[in-house]
Image (cartoon, rainbow, N blue to C red):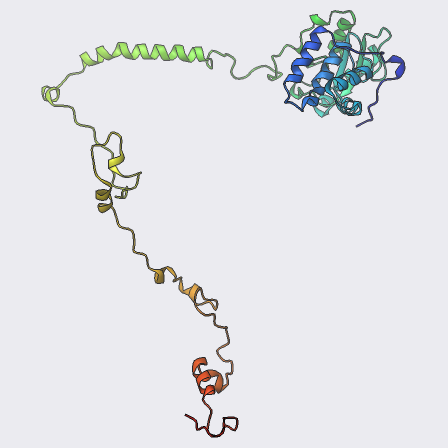
Length: 355
C-alpha cells in the first residue's frame, strides 16, 4: 500500500467544527461505546467529518482526537491507515472511485479509467479545472457479478460502458447527479443473469400470501367434500353398531425393567401405576455383585506382561538365565539359616554351644 500523507498546508483550513446535525450524531456515536472505550468512535466521527467537508482535514483529525481525549498522533494513525478517508481535497460534486480488481478489469475497467482521464484529470486525486470532479482507482467494491462498476459517494453504478460513464460524469458536473439511478445501468435487476431470468420469473409461487391462499382454498374444499363423501359411502349395519377399537398403547418390549427415571411407570404423568420405590427396586433387575478379585483381573494378554497390576514386582529374566544354587533359596529361609551359627563357625561366642 502506498504511503498516505496529509494534504499540503496551503490547502488546509485553519479550524474545524461539526455543524449542529453532525454534532448531535457524533454524541450518539460516542454513547454507543462503553465507558473508557470512547476513543473507538473515531472511525465514525472521521466519516462524519468527511461527509461534511468532503475530505478529512488536519484540523478535523485534531478536533476529533481532542473530543475523544486521545493523542493526536493516534487520530492521525487511523486517518492515514484507512483508504476510505480522503486526505486531499476532492471534487465538490463527485469523487468517482473506479474498481480495478480482477473481475472489473476483465470486463473493461481500464476503459472506464480512460474516460476519467479524459473528462476529469490525467492523474488520480486531482480535480478538474472547476474543482467539481475527481477520481481514483480502488480495490474491490463488492459488485463483481455486475462488473465493471464505480462508486460515487455511497452509491454504486454497475454494468457500465464507457459511454454510460461519460453521461454520468456530465450529469454530476452539471449538478444533476441526483437524477442518476444507482445500480445496474443496463436494465437488469440487481444480480440476475445478463441474459435475463431463466427461473423464478414470477414471485407469486414463492410468496407467503400465495401459499396461505392456496392452503385456505384446499381446507375449504376438503370441508365441503366431507358431507358428500359420508352420504355416498355405504355403512354396514354391524359395523355401525360396533364400538370403535381402543387405541393400542406403544410397546415397552425393548425397554429394560428398572426403577430408572426413564422407564419407571410410576413417574409417568399422569400415572396409572402407583408404587413405592421399594417395590420398584424389587421388580428391577439386580446389579451384578461386586468382586474385588474379579475387578482386578484383566485379559490374559494383559496378565502375562512383566509389570503386574498389584503385588510385588518381579524382575523379568530370560528362562535360560543361569542362577546360582544359593539364589534359589527363598529369602526368609536364607535369612534364618544365616542367623544360626554352625559348629565350625569360629566367630561364634566361646563357651556357648549352638542351639
